[in-house]
Length: 152
Image 1: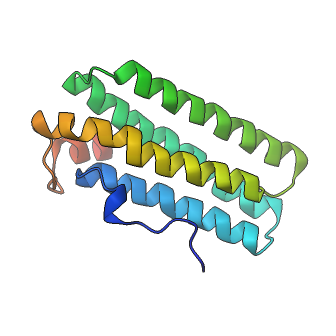
Image 2: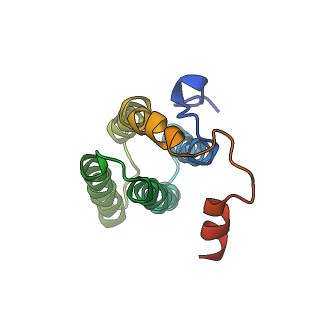
Image 3: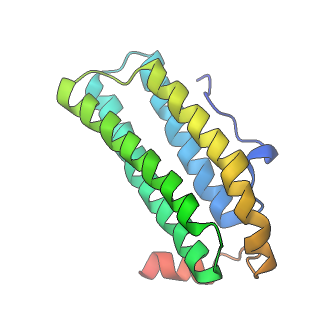
């Protein structure tokens, strides 16, 4: 499979938990890209797009929770960016679901551009703030967020 996005250190925010979630988002985008390239039916595309939509919501919830807990000053602006993408994803999902068509290359271009820009620009802004307030660069498997996430 030719990947649409290849993970690199330039995409890392330096916080393992968040980097791992970003890698999952990239993997889902790459799966969606492969489905489009291979002209899979709308049903296949819809399944991947659905997982992307749901995981994006989960990831944004984690980021926003950390921002609130740590008192990130640009929380509202970052949350607004998240809400805009969720609205776009919902619209795309509804279009594919309604028409039964597969997602388009325009959709992939939008998602790639948005995700890489969001990670490389907006998410990079909170990284130093999180690290200064005690987020460890490499969180242990049994970190508080892992305990919260798996038992919440």
